[in-house]
Length: 364
Image 1: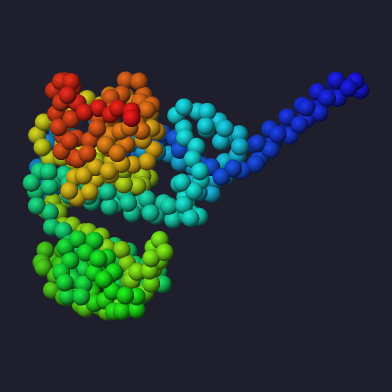
Image 2 (image 1 turned 90 degrees about the horizontal axis):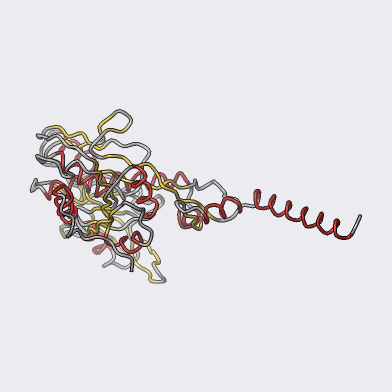
């Protein structure tokens, strides 16, 4: 065999071997891509996304779309060829696997965490919308989760209402952590609670909770950044009672990033007229009980997904503006918002047709 032919054959075989390695060699990366968008004013799988009963509602039109990101599963192992293709694709983003699943988190754990965040975002969306409308909402501090194997396991339960810690009334979840960390590890903390079952019964019967208990928990040690502090193994949250029913139906979606769009959808249905003026508006952003909008992940995928469905305007958290503006899909206007009030002001301009003063996002 001539030397030139042998060299070419060897090179070809090596190239084939490298391509095969690329197909089968797993790499520690995952992929994010644009996910579905859903109109919070419309229906999903044949059911209204927002269903309000016990209060007058009004007709709506246009779109207030929440947006999502599709990600590869925790157990999926991308190969080298897929990773390179993802890096080159304009609408996708390849990120280190640990970015989506830190500390070896399983897909099941991630799904559960996302479901909890989604549920909390729904509650905050309701509170923020009703507060903006001046509708009173009753709130109280609860045990949100109990860590397995912690001193609180079997003593405190998710849904227990925390009235006081060491005899001092608590008004916000942060108060609980503050009171506990005033102790040294090994010291006792006394919780005054309304048991979850009693609270549920009181809500069902529309009466004040009649039963409280005192529960003493011995703190243990937690190291945070090398600093030791006292903990009892719970996280505190907030629960609410609403004066009428607001039900959000949306399956197969997780995380907190739809909060802003849910809040706007609720506000639109509870007020006469149309927030959008019939325009196609999409957006994203977490929201807290006071209506503050927070940043989210995967902003570029969400703007691409929104524009692909026809969105003209995209309500963008202030913290995501600079990143989103670096690669804005053609025909989409990014509107900077920091609160639900900012979003309502922007929607007023959009439906009026005078958008000259819209606070748009700009790349830094």
